[in-house]
Length: 481
Ligand SMILES: O=c1ccn([C@@H]2O[C@H](COP(=O)(O)OP(=O)(O)O[C@H]3O[C@H](CO)[C@@H](O)[C@H](O)[C@H]3O)[C@@H](O)[C@H]2O)c(=O)[nH]1
Image (cartoon, rainbow, N blue to C red):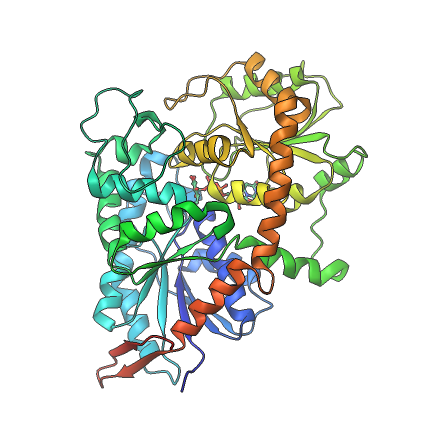
């Protein structure tokens, strides 16, 4: 008889990777499933407060290895001194394999042993652990289907490898493109294959291919043409489960808690509340990892001023302050963590100047807010192209290059004006509003992502973990017919 699955979730320790998996945990728990999240001690308190209302979500801590070259006590990417330490950090996470397997062994003795593991693509070694234990692993990538399909195709076929020019079009086998992609649109990890970090990604990609399925934080209406491409690149009938936008499950919960829940209102809410005109403010933020030089921040501040629009700008640089001659009254600069999802729901917000991290793209579109794309690193150039050229829900900030040249204030000013008040801005806003409606429908009962999540649960309900006496168990995957 089918039983309720017990899902183990193992997020990578970085904001943009962890949050969607916590939202997925909540969504699974709302369907009556038991979820165990594995994390390290210093990440556990913020996770535990995020899931505190859910009695069937449990936390298991495993110790993070001490690595001398990393900042003392560092267990999260946000604690790195610079992205140059990223490889050391990623590499350190491989040492979590032993405690992870010990935890699986302990859990195998439970009455309800784990049915499957959902782990981040950066934790590629979890696939080998899952194979040893006979549990299916589902891999989670923080990015969208299109970016994932391009990455996957190029890492399999290597078509870009011998291209000399950055401006030449790349042939991306197995992925339908309605615009030209050049080598300069590709993530550095694909462009420079000989770094330690690229090698780390290559290893993770290999394990990725052996996964039983892929969890995708997107919804089929948004990326439908690319879902089949991604699945065929994985091969072996691997399914891409589009269950997003995952944050909307949490947003619905927050809305249902209402005024008696934790109060999200802060300084910025009061500031936004003073703006009675709808869609009159642009929100500016570059996620949790991007770094802008002081010179670029100055250009940004002057550019926003030149635009003549009101703006709320989140700056992750403790040493930078806005230039003194910026006129007061139209701006709000913030250095603290801002609850971005709430900012984007405010009726005064009419645009988002964003680095196009996938979470930001999804959050903005789901709220019907068009994006001015300023991609910086990772797969962000791919997502920006998809956003601007394919789904046409954003505009590209001109003169942005992969090497991070300084974008001048006049360029920023003009582009912000166009997004907020120009003809092109209106066109992409209308599209964003349409997509926002589709996104919300997707996660509601009967919507595409909701159905997909339930099909996944149904399939997992037919996994039968069987202990073999050594604390090791074998799962039998059967189809649900
Ligand atoms: O002040 C802030 C800043 C960020 N956020 C949230 O933090 C997340 C940021 O995620 P994202 O927009 O994806 O940016 P990054 O943090 O840069 O994300 C990394 O992870 C993403 C998912 O894998 C990739 O798409 C990006 O390229 C990679 O840089 C979002 O949920 C934001 O709402 C806040 O709430 N407040």
